[in-house]
Every structure is written in C-alpha cells, then in structure tokens.
Length: 50
Image 1 (tube, rainbow, N blue to C red):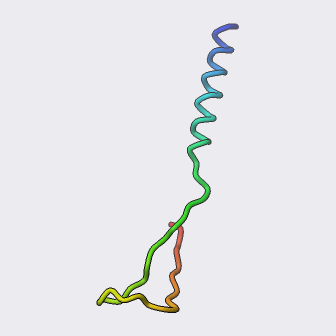
Image 2: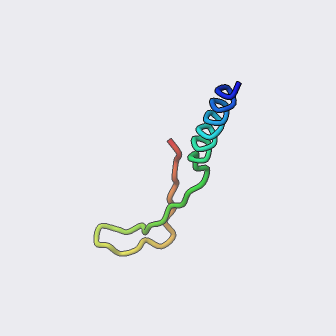
C-alpha cells in the first residue's frame, strides 16, 4: 500500500509540473519600418497563432 501512495504522489507531482509549463499568454513587440529603416505610421500588423 505504501508503494501505491508513493506512485500516486509521484504521478501527481509530475502532472503538476507538466500542466504548469503550459503558457497561455505572451507578448509581441517590434517596429514596422520601410527599406530605408524609417518607421511606417499607421501600419497594421496581424499576428496569427499557428
């Protein structure tokens, strides 16, 4: 019975660490420039999750 409890505890610890690693948010920063390096005012950027 002690072995069963130990295995259940190890399973719980492993499951918690895997679920904690799932990131659900993030950020994206940057600048939109033309070929000469100047900023483009009013540019629209669309980020697509793939």
